[in-house]
Image 1 (cartoon, each protein chain N blue to C red):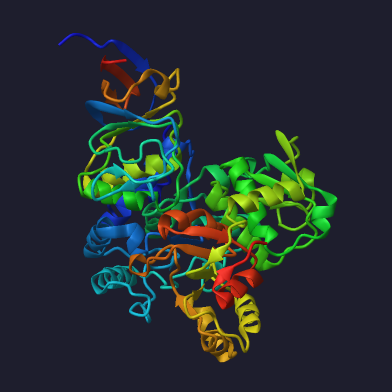
Image 2 (cartoon, rainbow over the protein chains, first blue to last red):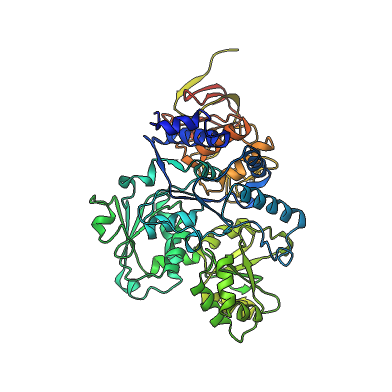
Length: 415
Length: 146
């Protein structure tokens, strides 16, 4: 089906706005045709996932170099996802120098296109804060699910480079989650009353993992939760987007498109209802490796990137403590939170305990071959899903407190 | 050369024509963490094709398991000449279609994609079958095997 184009869009496709915009709009139009879009929609901002060398590789450097030579500039506010190195401390993390140089090359190319170098998976906490109802061209699954669900902005999960096409043209094809009828909840999860009344912090990523596994790319609705913090919503969505392809969820009474169950489901009866109790939670946490015990090489917290509230919590848990000499504790965050945490003394407390800040990247994005890690402990559902392949470790899922306790003890106990 | 043993009509998701050998999987596939773009070999230890070369093949799998980084790995494989030459799915998700669009736009390589055949392709195609695929019309001709 042909996508209806405005006169301006036709001019762009005729090359009147330059080759980068022509090529970008060509890709977006073809995508729109394949996905049944009737028109394009203008976007408020973009966020790019192929900012990391691990994702972009040499193909990405070729693509960005070509676009820069042709004079490409982003047309809307555009931020970068984590890179594959900590730009300030890559040597401390044993990143090979030639690898770091390729990431620096990508950074230069993105700079030349006008991308804001946030290097974070949580751009919505720094310089890319969408409003309710905004249309966006974002990738990074954990950020997409956050801005759709918690803010009520509208974006599909764009792919690497398609996000850049959106940034260059300020447009995306209007299909999927840009349309209200596709934002209705499809699968309802009802929490048992005794679980809901005592829903502790690390249940959020665990429930996200369970929900993602169950629904794939459908829209889940969760009934029974009374309260959730910003960071708990972030952890829940990141896990659901990793174990499934969840791009939007509704928490009844909490997220903006779900004041009631009826509103969350758009007035239609949901196809499926699933109840979740303590038994289901225990089962999913076992799948995430929560039952594993033994020595620990590395602990990963701050996935998605830690907020200032989380940095305060880590600092208070590490105050006056020392992590085990055979264990690494790496706290992942972005440069904005790092700066604020430094001013507030949290960085000093964390580093004095022997932990390291890993800024602008994370365990999943860095080359960690030189470390030979065998067992990683994390409080992140996303890490729990990906690190067995990205880092090649066994993974143990635990609460934030238990993660820090494991770093201090150098081992994880059976819960 | 004799005519095709069987002709199937699906939905063309990405244009291009190719004739070659089929590699069939019964499991969903994610290129990100699933394919080594330097060799074209499947590296996902949880996958039934782990260790199999899909470079230059018509890769048949039910649907994609897509991280948003998927085109990163896919285009790196295209650049190295290690990508599959064509793809047949039960249902092609936008992520995989985007990979073909980007390969065409940035590397001038057509990777035809067809989905929506009348029967699941993994039920009538076997690894090693020779097939002709047209990604514009959605037509698939099984030339030998099956």
